[in-house]
Image (cartoon, rainbow, N blue to C red):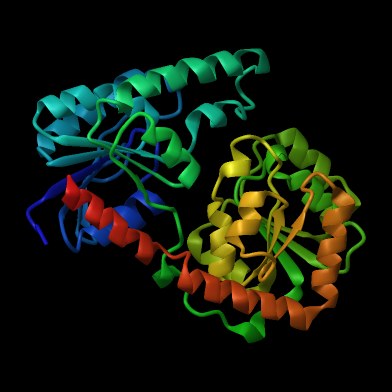
Amino acid sequence: MPKQLRICHLTSVHLDGDIRIFHKMAKTMAQDFELHLVVPNTTTRQQDGVHIHSFTAETQIRSKRMKHTVNEVLKVGLAIQADIYQLHDPELLRIAPQLQRAGAKVIFDSHEDVPKQIMDKFWIPWVFRKLISLVYARYEKSRVRQLDGIISVTPGICARFSKMNQKVALVRNFPLQAEFPNPNWNQKNSQHFCYIGGLYESRGIREVVMAMKDLDAVLHLAGTFDDPLLQAELESTKAWQKVRFYGQVGRETIQEILQQCSVGIVTLHPTPSYKEAYPIKMFEYLAAGCAVLASDFPLYRNLLEDNTCGVFVDPQNEAEIAHALQDFSAQSEATLKMGQLARKLFEAKYNWEMEAQKLREFYISL
């Protein structure tokens, strides 16, 4: 394995310690290559075999970030003199030509289908979303044609990029096996459910909370509400009495929540981006030995192998969600069995270690 190959991950948006960038990609590849990471507003250091380079920058105000922060990423990145630069944010596409002129290979790691994701951005006025999406799609197409390769997280996104660039690799964002040891099945409670992640209306949080109002069960919520009015509305309901709300918590607390819950909920609304997404929380539920209550999308049925470890509902139908949760609660033995099948599916197909080998081969092929 070419130990001397120098690879540098660049981000202007993601935080230090990002799960995909640092824990999955950088740390696992540091066993075979010289790994560097440029990330704003942290400490320059070496950690777990990764050289972390940082600088102070604006990351909250988009206009300043897209200009000044991206320029700083370029400056720090060029000084590393990497063989391969991996861009993790769409706004970094504009610095790809400068990196290539320095003699490096440049690849784009597209974490989402950005044109479709723009259509779901609540902070963009609806009347402008389609135009912005089209303008970005055209810009993205012109940029990625010139790159040395593309990485993305779903077959659908990879298929879209394959029309623009011949070198595309599918590297899915599955959980690390090391982070998810075998569950203690005796701690699982069929009356405890969890929803982990962004608490947005479009991700079905209103229906999930309201479905709890007449159930003799507990809903564990971990994440941040994007809308304080929605949070206040739900907190004022009878259903909220069945909720344990943790807010934004670390990975250790998430593990504790998953250990006691028997069902993980991923009832995203049927938006264009969600219907084709691979939600990381779904695979973390599998890893933790939880049965899954999921939106009734064809992709999700295919991923969960036709009901062996999942139940599918209309994510906008509160009564249907409540009925499914009641069944999970009442049929504890069957729910535990579904969780065990979920864990086996994670071990067989949906773990990061299998994806890491594809990433390693992709780097070498460049």
